[in-house]
Image 1 (cartoon, rainbow, N blue to C red):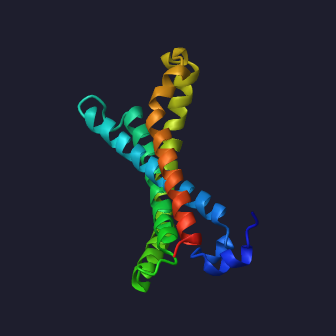
Image 2: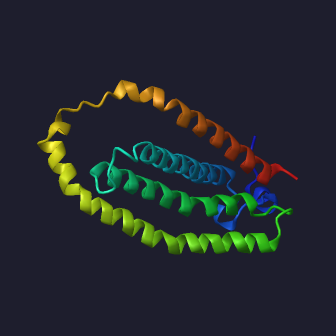
Length: 181
């Protein structure tokens, strides 16, 4: 079975940057969808834990700042990836209006612009908490904490399941954009 690349380029509803390559489109879409979904889950996780500990963990504490930093990092990745996901899904779709595409492209530019203050904020938090974390990990009681790698595997089941579902969706979207009607 040979693949006629010129035919794919003519009928595929893929952005030109993919050069008609459905595998590249599928892997890009899957990567961006996974980053968006998993990072949004991390934002929720940090928000949930912060809310649950609201009476136990002071906003000036190391744990609060750590959760805030991780939440901002995850939110930044979500903000940067989600407009691109929408663009890749909408591109070449006859049912999507030009105005919707313009709106998505505007959201992509806004995501570009909003990334700088988000990245700067988590970096400032990182610089602020790095010395006490380094000291605690070297000298404090944290140095005797042992990471149980085997206990990590059960917590990875849901993200792995999400990975498989999103990869399947991305492959099916790529297939439909290239070979669909």
